[in-house]
Image (cartoon, rainbow, N blue to C red; front, side, top):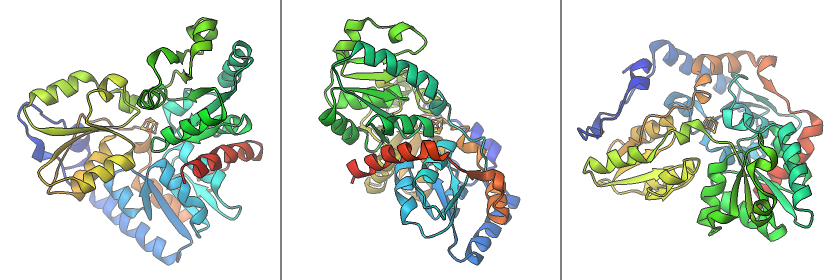
Length: 372
Ligand code: SF4
């Protein structure tokens, strides 16, 4: 199967054709480049490390020295000896790596245009504006800003400066518990879904969760609604995960198969409510590793992770809820990683300005401390 066929592939739940998930999508030329990348890495004798995010394709994961979610990969940085780190992920991840790296390390992002639309949904100007509205309406409350890892360095810096923290999908609950131990109300950004799914899991009632639309006066709420809120959610989302919808689960259930449905917490709450398990990519991969051979597992997250899991465990039935591809992760490819490791081009370097780094680092280190 070639790459085009792979990305055009659709699961047919009606025929229960779960076994036809594709298994090979690399071209001859890519294979040659993969071998050259591995040779080059060997010749550099430990001075370069490739970090690959779970949402990368199989071959990019295979050439990675470490594969993980954004939390696992950022926690690795300070323990890596290599001075050159090639980050096969998106821009905000490479920024976090730079913030947590040593002075003698350089982070390379093979395509600096590989951004994240959700991270771009919260800009520092908008956040400063919302913050001043909230501090005016809540003069006697301590607001703790918590940002999902999937945000720009500037947003992380704001959270560090205002005694907040970063979180990821694997530690959002621990970070929120910490936030309520030091403050009264959380401003959670940019992903409203991770925020509300975590808040609901923690028992915070819907009536105390509000979605703040920064385009509207007071986010579209009355002062008294804001005063009652326990969590104020930024109106951002990930299109890769909000693509999953309840009718897809319905068609899955109608297929008559006995399945376990696992979904990522960036999905909409109405899908989360129908799932058998909800968690980060770490949770999903660990669940699959431990699952029984005869269990059919349907996964609602980025397609490359599902594909790689299906490949890794050919005797298990691992199926995507639907094919949802992150087009930003897709911007990192084998030829660009090849260029990065052969030339270490200056224009692939990621440098977060020093004035942003200091407070962003505080917010990231607070998360690492809480999640220990
Ligand atoms: S999967 Fe969603 S949140 Fe993650 S990088 Fe892609 S667009 Fe951003």
